Structures are given as C-alpha cells and as structure tokens.
Length: 125
Image (cartoon, rainbow, N blue to C red; front, side):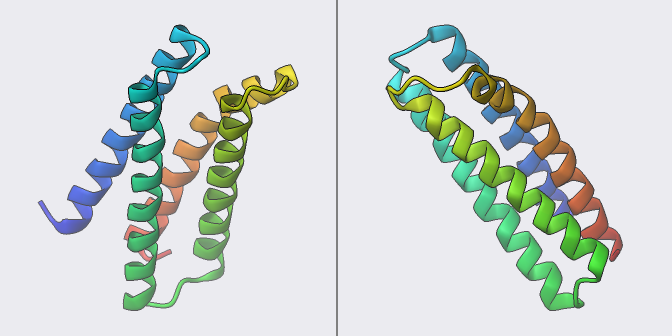
C-alpha cells in the first residue's frame, strides 16, 4: 500500500470511529462520558490534522486547480460547522433542536465532501 492509500484508510477508519463514538455519546446522554467524549474529540482533531497534511502535500506536488480549491473549502467549512454544532451540544446551554439535527446530518455531508476532495486530490483534479 502507498502512503496515500494508508492515509485514506486512516481517514475512513477515523470517520467510522467518530460516528460510532458520537452515536454512543448520544445514547449515554448528558453529562457526557468523559472517556468517550475525549476519544470523539481527539479523533476528530487528528483526522482534521491528517487531512490538512494531505492537502498541503498534494499542493506541494502540483498547484491545486479551482475545483480542488473549492472542494477543500467546502470540506473545511463543513468540518467547522460540525465542530461548532458539537461544541454547542456539549455545553450546558439550551440549544435549539435544529443544532442537534445539524450535528446528526453534517457528518454525512462532511464524509462525502472529504471523500470527494480526496478523489480530486488523488486524481489531480
């Protein structure tokens, strides 16, 4: 396996772990289990850093075209929205119900966006 294939496999496994730990957290209810919550957040941060490194390395090989840049921007914005919604859910404030729904649907959009971005980066546009 190439380095890129291993990294893509790591991203896929990370998304699975994030989603499973998120489902587990929602079933445990508040206050959130500290260990599961820490894993959920740490893996999210790790996959974000890994994706940033992958984009940076792809950019060093060849400049990104407009479609690749747009895909990266969409993926970054979806990650930011996902983290923001998760952050709102983790505090003891009363948040609107749509924030919970957003945090349930954004992982799917973020995973699809990430997959599309990786395909574009691997194929060179």
